[in-house]
Length: 70
Image (cartoon, rainbow, N blue to C red; front, side, top):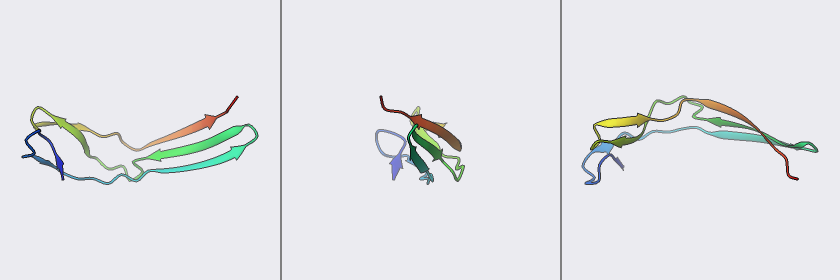
């Protein structure tokens, strides 16, 4: 269970995020594609004000990364 208050009296709904990474190493460096929340779930990431208000989690996102070591 996830609780929304310090007294552990308000239970927040659980959620599932699907994340994935694929990468490819070349002479130019490493290229990677990060996918976050691929199922585009709407979820409460955290709460405040004794659980009466919540902060929604991030929506689906894709990120292309290039890493080069010098």
